[in-house]
Length: 577
Image (cartoon, rainbow, N blue to C red; front, side, top):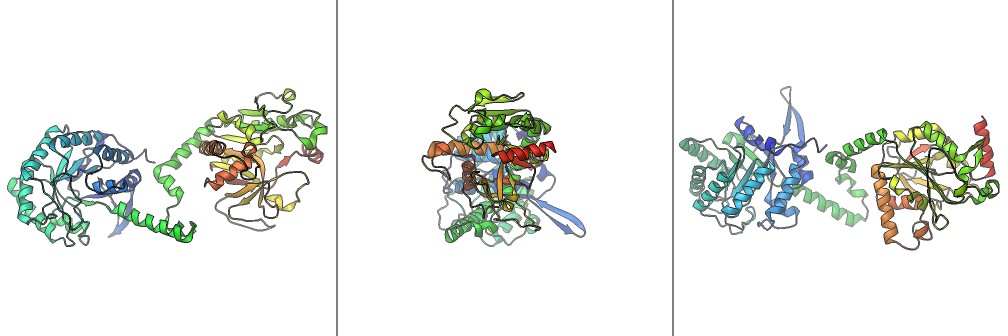
């Protein structure tokens, strides 16, 4: 989880120096946002060397001016403000615990650089590297660009100003020498290194855009003699972007202590995104790009969402999930039997339908029950539940009644139709489901013909599987593809029984979609003639169409809907048994 990979500024700041003091060759990877920071912070490979397990990781993170600018869609010419840069830096620091080295461009003038040093040090950054070019700089890797070097005396004074303003001995200022980039002789690069070291710099980075490492290796050899002459021990830094055939071992042997892979995550991401975008345009669907894409669940895992979900589910288990029972509508098919009473007050074996439901919910430890009343509300009563009223029940739909209790939905909820009876094990099984949205679906719809006048909510699963007798099947994801009352029963795979569970996340998605639909749409919508009569299944289908994952829990018995006198007789017989 991302919260695990965090540390305080004072704990992080000294990590880079500690690695260098221990003789470690510091391997550094570029990051340009929080997600790439997590990758740089956590990715590792495991191998074997002479029977010993070897684990390789990156030791530090490089916050690059080039990739920060490019990720924001701007050129690398110091056009991105420091406030914008510090926002990116803090975004990465918030989800990592490894030391960070910041690409400070030219550092600006000496006054600006003092503020930069102070802010980076306070944030917990371990080092800043500034290049000895005149502000505003031009990126070093592009050929044919005029590279204007700063006067070495002026740059040395900037270094001294920065060193005086820092508060901690852990913070490092490193000078990036651009002489070779500008086409100057090796002697000038060494002269600049000498002046910067005498000014108190904490390390030197030598930069080159040659595809051959010879000139940086030559500089490294001369740098060793320079340090010996000055009786100093200051790390040497390289960025093997263009001279990429040379290995880390070879660079280390030459005297380089810090090796920075400066822009590879952004460059590889750009190539992958472009390939994906072009494939989508060519194919006009997303099937072909799936092999290029990390599964969404892997992203959830990386950024900590699955940990949040697990905590939410633990919280839900320690609190009583609200149950909402919409019972506001009339029941024309049972009008004579009910004699003006709401269907929830129908008696079966001396006990009302709502009391049967309350008993089942109580057996599963659900005590926070809210019933939405409308028709015949004065004749509706039950102990141990809350009753809310939908005064406009005759104008809307069952969904309108459910939304009367939307304040109960915030941390997740269960929705139960008021005219179904269920066995205890169905609720027990539903409680164990971990998905955010679960509809309970009966797969036995294939075995019976629809009753005349009885409107059923049908489901077609995403895999379009239609069950057959005595068939073994193996399905990894139980996802709903379509739901509604106008689906052809012959193509339906399941029937939605009127029982659904929403986690906190699922409830947020449910409410978000509902609010957007009623705000933005008028007239016909999904299967409804008008948005004002939007049904529960219409809203679920809209969520599916918008890309939300709606899962189903499959059953084939253990429930009964009450729509007719025959259903009542069957329920009487079941309870008598």
